[in-house]
Length: 504
Image (cartoon, rainbow, N blue to C red; front, side, top):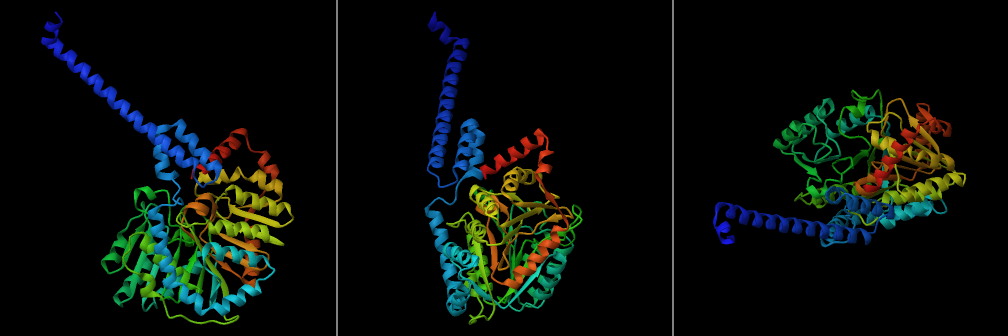
């Protein structure tokens, strides 16, 4: 009877059903095994990771609670690219070679200036800041022939356009954001004119940050002979940004700071009444570290030309006090140290009178938060100013979760309300200023490519301190009474956003 059933059409269906069930059973078993092995692998990697324990525990929680989504999220935004690997060693070797080619001769030619500048810093907060920067960043203070500070896009961009129009050899441009608007049209016209004159143009922009902007102008420049390249376009790199901004003209000058390439950085655009930002122009040997950074970033993102060798200007010697000492520091997910963050911590722990900070965002890691609170508790005048008119709600609410601890320690917290504050600056006593692209949040401090300039000059520090006090006139000071007015729902929201910051 059984043989009869098996020989019937119904028997064929039964046999097919058995084999199908077994196939899917084996398939699900294989998938489950692969998922289990993947989770085990991630757990082992996290357990042996050289990162903040709170970050490791947060990722363990996500991966174990949401296995599939957690693994996907970890692959894209959770992996620690500071872990030692053959690829990372190769990248670091390339960057070291570029530094040797471009920077070592400049530092050697200005060794007398540097030694005197370091000696002048003895027994001051700048001495320790300089030492940390040199040990971790590998760059000593170099002479700047001129330093020009711009506190508005309406100051910076006319000067930039005018100087680019006189370029004779090359123009290198690197921006996180390159929009397509009134300003970029003017920049495009100047670059097209220089290309016709035989000037070489290289442009780097951040791929993901610019994905929503049209590329017609960049394509037109590329068709005219400019070399245009996006940064961090590979899928595993999607969590990282090239947040640096710089324009290098003939190796003689560099523009850097917080401003991207867009009209809103001049007039605030449709969203903001004011765009308050800080950038600067440097000239002299101090341009060399920026050229080194541009050249190494170019290679890392697939560029073929050795820009450091091709475009390094003749080495110029400077002796004692022949210029302003400026130390250029870079950190990113590729660097061994979190150099910019460590310099901020050193500034906080060594300031004698005051340390005044500006950043549009505030999501610090535990060491930086502890340094801020300890400095304020010891009697240092610690002030932190961020935007009170946010462009992104998540980091704005996350920052508010840190306010109670800051205020209890004695940190004065200000929110700029005249428009959007995008400035990234630190002034220490009346001795030095740190100005650059680095925000006081985990992404900038740990993940992004960032560059800052430490200007060891009392006049610059005093002048920027005056600017800071003018900015305070456009701020509201946050008090404990203000925080007491927050509802439980608002406090819970802020704490949740703060928790998410651990997953970056």
